[in-house]
Image (tube, rainbow, N blue to C red; front, side, top):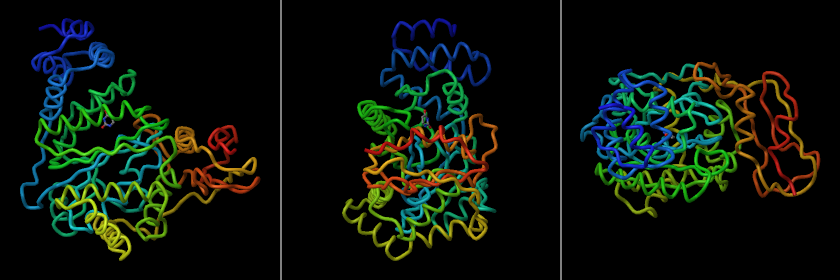
Length: 409
Ligand code: URA
């Protein structure tokens, strides 16, 4: 078999067999297929798509490239949640404690941020002392003790996805729906999830720009789930506007704490956290969404979700009293009076990376204390000169970096 024949076949829009996909993709992992050959194949897939059988085969090839976790029956049904990535997306910090406090165990393996989308692990590391690299034994012990674990990936899960994703990132092949679906589903299945909830972000600050693409991805992931006997639910949520008020690692943890303490409610971020928690609980416990919602609201109102978050922080060595945000602040004021029509997620994301909250290259060091705190959300009225956002900075930045964020009419 020659990889060039496989590339040509896909270039002509033909279906590849399991053997051909295995030869090309595992060949790449082993270093026999070169970057330029895999880049050409990925681009051909991006342009010509894949049939369902090819997508199931690729998902299997990703899963089988590494370890597969199995928590057995001890914890009942494990529900995992995945977001396709967004700006200010700190939902995991809120829904993990809510869901665990309602008796559904949660082992959440998360990643770091790259580019303008943040990562849960970076956010948790803004809590001094919080350990994210847990051993398998510690994960099991903690799961038994408090029913909630938030860890960086431990085992050697889907190593093939890791190298392919890094190549896609630099070859313009990230937004292929078959490639996104097999990448996400392989990770969730390899991590031992029985049921999977996917939050598909759509909009300017997301991987997918249209609802049609998001719907296609949703249908595809549900099909892959069916093939692997996993229940999959998808929620399509907006990413034209940042989620909530804070973008930046420590700032986002502080906002998550406010939500868990019941200080924030009735904004799109809190509503999304409630909706996702309801789905996870109804999937985990097999109860109706109405019953699950009552459980979520009771957990928040009685402070149980917040207590669960404190248990998580304590168990993983964190000290919330030592959390810091940058003491240097810069205010953004409204240029005119009116209603906020738009807060551009992508502009906020790019600004937060420039402030030092995100990485451009994987090796970049981030500053946990910097970021953006919005004071107003879309639809709110402002007066000219009113402070509408505060930047937490290392040093003052030029207004050209934020002048396109707000549209006031
Ligand atoms: N998230 C992933 O894990 N994989 C993709 O391909 C896209 C988003």
